Image (cartoon, rainbow, N blue to C red; front, side, top):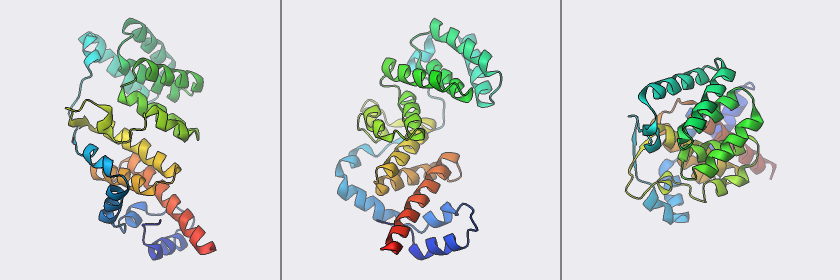
Length: 243
């Protein structure tokens, strides 16, 4: 089923001149309440998992507290270098040393995996993702990173196993948890939104998009998911026209 105004979609396609369509404008024509009501009808069980609060305040993981304050600062500086792709081989070497010293701190594994990815060391990156998931099965960023890897390598069918068939973030934390860090929420619904598109559950993909858009309509993850939804809707439109 298509939810974007078909006339607007056709008009935007004709006027695009081969450029990306304005996904924000097109998706603004979607009846959000209609989609949410359909989701509640098809998947009534998700209602009890859907309510939570989002914070941008730092949320320190329990095992992170094991690290000396001076070394925390050093590791965070290494992470800043990863974001800028600076001296990655040296960064990787230092993170491996910290991993050996603090084998039970999942954040270090996460940073190391990202460093491998930035350094285009694909095999090491994947091995670290698997190791992180196996060693820390409840670590949300480990699940998110492995899911994104599978999405990017067209192995999206494996994601249901990675997430234990749990597609609301509240299902991955203790029942008493009701506040989640924005980075975890954004990462989780970014990968689940793209996953739902791949398996044809467009309503659930929209649900993820709405949540990402509510946090920041201009964020990269929102834009990527938005463009992928447009591509899905275009495919549906073409099938309708050909019929």
